[in-house]
Amino acid sequence: MEMIDLNRPAPTTEPERQYYFIKKVQEYVKAQSEKLGRPLTANITTFGCQMNARDSEKLSGILREAGYVETESEDADFVIYNTCTVRENANLRVYGRLGVLHGYKKKNPNMKIALCGCMMQEATVVEKLQKSYRFVDLIFGTHNIFKFAELLAMTLESDRMIIDIWKDTDQIVEDLPNERKYAFKSGVNIMFGCNNFCSYCIVPYVRGRERSREAKDIVREIEALVKDGVVEVMLLGQNVNSYGKNLEQPMTFAELLREIEQIDGLERIRFMTSHPKDLSDDLIEVMANSKKICPHLHLPLQSGSSRILKAMNRRYDKEKYLALAKKIRERMPDIALTTDIIVGFPGETEEDFQETLDVVRQVRYDSAFTFIYSKRTGTPAAVMEDQIPEDVVKDRFDRLLKEVQTISKEMSERFTGNEETVLVEEKNSQMDGYVTGRLGNNHVVHFEGSEELIGKLIRVRLDECRGFYYMGTMLDK
Image 1: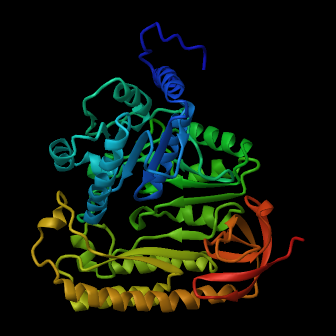
Image 2 (image 1 turned 180 degrees about the vertical axis):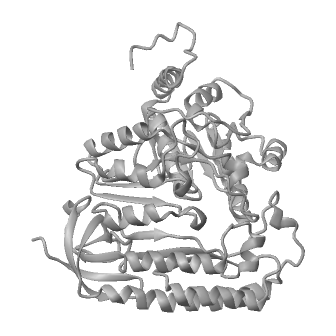
């Protein structure tokens, strides 16, 4: 970026405008630090999915560029909660934590509190914050996260609550700072929003319509990450399989993967989430033939009952899902399939639940995220009749969990004795002298090694399967 003159009006183009406000915040932070005789601290707490985690890295990058020092403590000069609203209790957690922050703010009147993310896209939430949580300084949503530097500058200059919520956007701003949690791997947004409108899901209402980034921008970002030491990327989107449909020159997700695979120095490619209705034969072929795409596919089922799937607006039925899973397994026998399953959707009978168990037994998932249906105000399912009694749902959930865990353990054991490549991610916190890594299929491995191995790809023999992880021996000495 060229020299920024704060005596001139802020630029009107992005990202130049945001760099102008980063400079403005730098001046404020520097002055306050000198006045207090210490650095200004910032804390980011992230709720929810990988998309939120990636957004938090962008927030972190801007705060660091502006001169804040990040801290684990919420007793900081600037605290931001990046919120999730997929389930009702996620909202309740945020309200509970805000009470603690209010106590910190009473002790530190210069403290600023910000809330962003999916929960802020709900009008009822913002109304409640305005009425009962007046000590919050800044509220913004998911569509204007690129404006964070500008909103931060406004907040530091104001004593009033600032609210900036966009209902939707088609804007994507590139080339802003971000601070990665890991040096060796990174999430990369390839698209934003969702067009599916599953009847239980709030995401399309809070993340907006689908909009894809240009392939050249995605490739450029990954090339820069690789140059900076990244060996693994996770491509992120609410439904990666519908990538590229809204571009001026449409391209498929499979075509994008072929381009990304050509990037020198990139070792591993992951992605999530895949919607079964959009998963193409071309994508299966690209995965089967790839040396870099990890042999792991997250394929949300949600229910095994065709009747319930129709009520969920999933746009596939049990037979189509089973046929797709069979096709994937035939082409890639060693692939790890994982899934999401909801228990207790309105109107679910015991017969519907048995259909779900049947799919679980046929597909044999490596692992599954199992959820009790959570009523989300504003979604069609929230007003459906025949909401399931809590004791019935709990019984079904327990039975599903038992089935999933039994199969998951059996599926994990099939790799015992194999020699595999592991990306070492961290020092093992439970066992001295051990590190923890991940196979391409997303299984976790613990083995003896030093922290110098973190970020490296290491050959390991899988000696023993202990349910949901392996104990291994390093072969690369």
